[in-house]
Image (tube, rainbow, N blue to C red; front, side, top):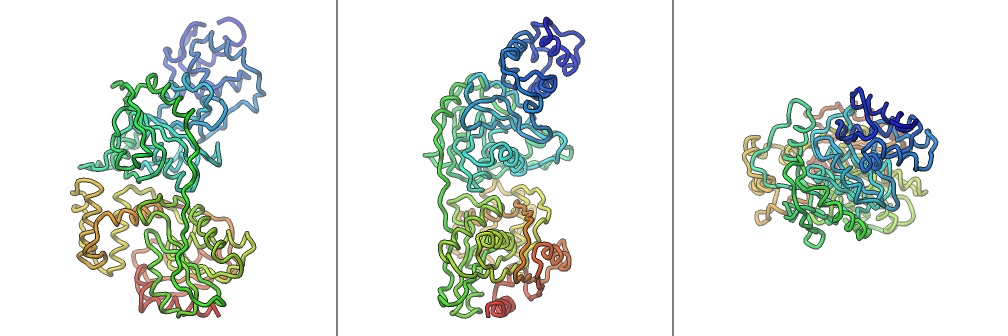
Length: 558
């Protein structure tokens, strides 16, 4: 190596690659470098005062060429040049405009992303790697929730452009779904060599050993993707199963030659790069779909303070019908219908997004005066967040009532499709106050997600919980909304100081005691009063059990 820059690079290469001698015409990747080491290389070089980025390493991997590129680049102070440490997105290439976020390919590698950089010269590109020191996610949904966090740390607001090879494409799609579930705009989803099979006949068990490749293979096989109106571009030839998820006008298939030796993704980055560059240049911002959650349950008197009710996970506002009857016709009652129950819209993926839509609906319908808020189960979190938003806007929240809801901050375990389905069945059994009649072996024997949903539908019809002439498809919306809520966590810092009540039903299967639930809510509602009722978590909203809730509300409504 010649000169200080080449010698400094050679020293870092030797240490990172574990080689004794490095020549000025040696190639970083030929010596054993890979995408993760390229990231470490950039970090180490910047610490030495040599400003570069991963894209430069990728397109100039020969030591002498890399040194020349670094020498020609403008100098940047070390404290400004160092990438953020820890679990974060990695800047692979600077540029102008909206960045492209590329997922790891399932093996943990960003090599495919690096090979795209030659074709994306003006596009800022970030790689989203695995976090080897962080928690091990066992579902695509769990992995995507982390990707959402990494992306929003770089770019808090959209529009967002995402891509991934093979398994990374599934991850990109689910990440886009979760971003859209936060009412954030997604303008491009690129799936390169990605396939989705919604009718898997055999579901693998989650591996006991957390090797990444085994985890991602099992996660892909157990992934239940949601239909969407996202702008999806499939590079690889066939629709690959996504025609069942994405509307025809939103699914764009671009034939690209394939290569069989690239692991998860069979599309060659060299063949896909130019196509991807053209698609990104033509991508347009997609407006966030409009949705109004407000439903009039009971008109009531214009002189009475209105009550706004948020149902639990997967439930609709019709669950408050018996409550309206108990309250009397003078009380105006509104329901805040969760998005996604109709099967046409994506459900909200955060409490904050759902509450923001609901608060906007309240402001539009009742722009002045006090309001009462009520939330059942998961709806208690949403109602709490609505109270925070309305209070911040100067509105008077006359009372906040949580009906059998877990306190904010409750840990949310990672759940795959089958885990969610088992929990959903348990909810129906609470409604029946008896077994639904579905055994574990019955679920596992079904040939795919649609068949499992059809099995649940047959049992609901048999027990009278679903209309006899209904079709299994009508359950898709409630199930996806239930799944989204079940995977949502909520950690507020605000405290409600107004009149607050917590109504609890007896539940021997609950993980927490009533006292623990009450203590959790008291940390966020300083004037909380706790009451108990009869029935189950589900039947407490039905007559005769709902009478306890109605009497409580009539007391606070005086």
